[in-house]
Image (cartoon, rainbow over the protein chains, first blue to last red):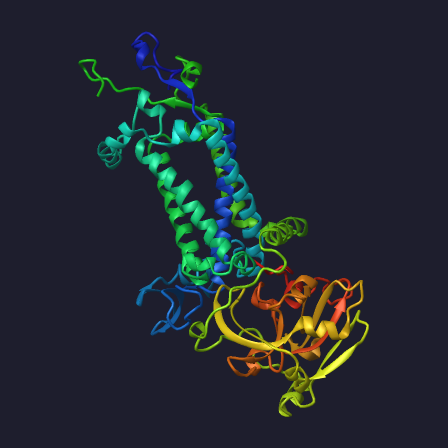
Length: 290
Length: 269
């Protein structure tokens, strides 16, 4: 601990190596980030509740009930009813999590398990209320973010990688695989893989999940009859909505994992207060930066 | 800008108290999203706030897809080999059973409420009226879709016959099928739509499905087609149509069977 370290023996740190704090995330970004966390969590979990009302996915306009490309359900086996997930004709035993799982201690047939859905019990109408309320909040927040990113220069300054960064993408991939995280000046900017991940999410997955969601509305399908076919039809839109949601979940998993391995408190603090401590440059015996 | 504000002597780590705060906040978020949402789902005022989104959705939908916007229509090739039936598949009610036994020869569609000229029409009379045939996609609130070919009389045509009064705001469909044990009280299905949907070109009272008389599983002898809304709005086994001013005197006061059970009255989403 700093306070108990013997003062006399502690070597004075060279000024260049002292941790530096930078104001990394501005207030609007921080507020919108946490609104996003709440919205995405509720949207994903209430979305799984809605999915559970008919736990199968199709491609096209209508449902080909006998041949969904994904279905989560129950099958009879020697051990009784077991949870089975079928993907493109192949069956997987997913008992306990998908198809059959415990609800209040009792085994029940349901798509996604109770701990992954809002509400926990099978309750489609309530899942829809949660989903549509937070969908509005999420879309309004997202539009505010895009507007802010464009007007404040956040997009050009922080999100778009430079040509030079794109050229060095290979070494960035290597650094990630070796869990080497940037320090000093390099840590002030998002790295190129981070840039690309954010751009794919902001301008790819998020618009897709929203448009595919809107395509499932029979009234919005009437805006311009036939537009839903651009997504392959209403059931394709439902599939794309589901896949995009899982793409977002994958992003969140990687995002949180990166935060965990590169200084969880530092990152959390910077997303709450704005202040981020630049990890000090490592210096080898010769005094050169590694 | 940010570099200028950095301070050289800043401590590298958050103070323990702040760390505890963060940990507490994380735990709070976790608890909120799991058990919390279940508790909130049983809180009436929270649910009212959540449900308020349907008014926003309806307003926005009306704005971008005008009152007369048409649902997509399909071709014969798109028609599903088997049109899925859902909800009631065979009404257990004795009065319906009697009508079914007689091939609906004694059935009449009554139209009343806030109209100048209450009327009743037999199935043969409805079939003799102008008709509309449309191949549309039926979207269930559960998530599946089925494409079918419907033939029926436009509701607008019937409304012209009975002439709604100026204060009529909704069209109510009263159905034959009890959703629970008929002995335990009135649980017959009912639904309602506003006049935009009632007068919409594609709103028909269908008596044929895929060129055959409507099967019992799909609502024989007559069902509503409300093409820009989800399946539960498409009342089956329609017995009586009423023009009404509000839902207040109806069973649960929400304008429909599923609406009384928590679903949105506006089912365009």
